[in-house]
Amino acid sequence: MPDASILRGRIAIIGWGSLIWDPENLSPHLAGTWLMGEGPALPLEFSRISAKRKMGLAVCIDTLAGTPCATHAIRSTRGDVETARADLAARERASLELIGMVCARTGRAAGTGAAHVAEWVARTGAAGAVWTALAPNFQDHAGRPFDLDAAEGWLLGLTGSSRDEAVRYLSSAPNATDTPLRRRLASRAWWQAEAARVAAEDRAR
Image (cartoon, rainbow, N blue to C red; front, side):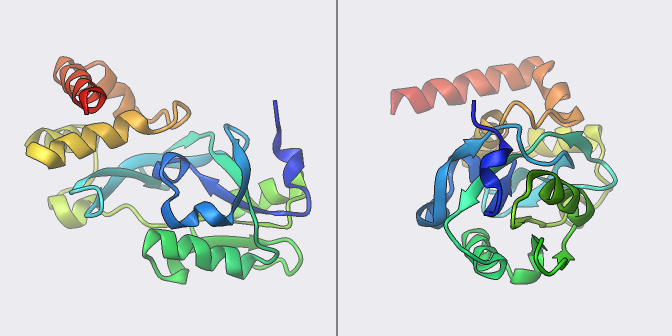
């Protein structure tokens, strides 16, 4: 099985959510396949309400509510960190300041999680890495701090295509994105029924 040693001297893109299965316009700038579980461990939780995901919960780096989870890495075709950073920013429809980066050559690092990623870059011999550093924003939209009760309540309040998209996103995340919210939902009968329904409808299309 490939390991992170193949990233030696290359720029890595680190992912843990929809980037894995839906790279969109980043696809032309990816080389090889995702190295599942070979990225740095980062504190993750589904604590970002995403307009792109129809107001469902998206996974992000969360230094307060997050649980350390394995992430995944793939090679960028780019030869410098800043160009790879711009590629990821375009995919995320985000400013460069919201894309984390580490450059082994210059020692420059920016973005939430940079210390963890810098250690990983040094260990693997990668030339650098970029990742999405969008912040949790649950309280901004829900009006209360993120916790498991609040998050489940938010999901229960979604209807129609918003509910479907939330179920689809959470179900599609890599198994390594094993957060407390995801574990709670897996034990809930209503969530199990919704996941089965959405999966059946998707298969029927």
